[in-house]
Length: 131
Image 1: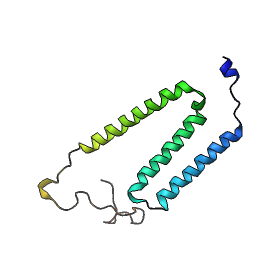
Image 2 (image 1 turned 45 degrees about the vertical axis):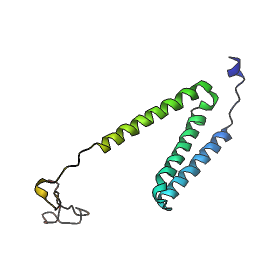
Image 3 (image 1 turned 30 degrees about the vertical axis):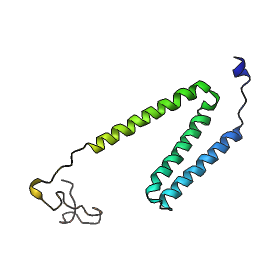
Image 4 (image 1 turned 180 degrees about the horizontal axis):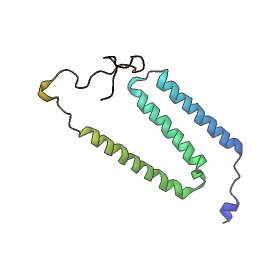
């Protein structure tokens, strides 16, 4: 109880600072995703930025920085669930059977849809009716 009574009061400026860092990281993610082409490094860089933002939110806005025991439980459990989610998804994607086209048909099985159905008049042969 004495620990809680002596807990340091948090300033609103601390939260504003964390919010500013989160905003900068969000803009950095957008710039890296749209303006800069990093090629194969874009996904790892985006994931690192996402992990940093998640850590900031968990530590400061969820007050886990003040709770020593909660940190020891929350992060390992989160990592396990993330590994399960990604692992099961990857296993599903890697073990799917690719369907073969019947009788070696080379053309598309579905008709091409026009870019917009609103530009074609009703009854036009180019208008996609959806069936």
